[in-house]
Image (cartoon, rainbow, N blue to C red; front, side, top):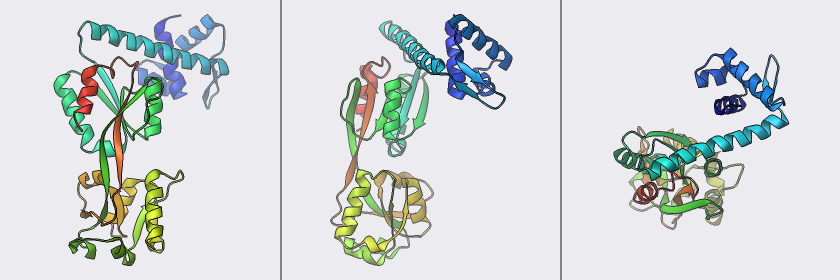
Length: 292
């Protein structure tokens, strides 16, 4: 059994398609099939079931995939540790980010990273905080920009700031010319708000606020995500409370205003695995901390 065979198998297990895996690995599909068959012969077990329509992992294949992935990750981390001890610079960094960090915070961090490590290769993955934490724990992401969490196990989380929610409206809205805006002013407006399958802290807060001030009847549209909410406001369908990072979106004819009696903000944190030799270098964490 060769280490290269493990890498080939992991690629097939992730794609569940020999053609796509071969293209990803930049090798011929027949050569890939031969290597996987040789691996199965060496192990004496079938790792994959193949039909003309699909490829699936067997139970043994699922276990072997998880262990192979862990072994390859450990090997990669070991190489990184050795390079760090020898004073070598970081070669690769994978960053996970939620949408709010994509505007402002992330570009500033990437600028710092590129100045310190000019030859580094950076890959950015966007997702939810939950997904990013899971990928950090699996070793697929080195550093994540997420909503605040507690330190659990090897996961480390550090707050780097808070972000307020503002009322967004088109620049020709009657509210845009008011010196001050109160919640009572919203009763004559159509309100656009979040309505997610999993009730978030933000959604709960604004639902309670609307209920207390008699604004539930003004809810005209709901949506699942921030970008959809901003687009609906931009189309003139109504007004809505959005995180302040949305003011960085280009080509929008929107005005963002504070509302009296509304003082709501959400935190932003960086997260990493304390066992990850790349993220756990003091300079990486310090660079992320310094963008607060």
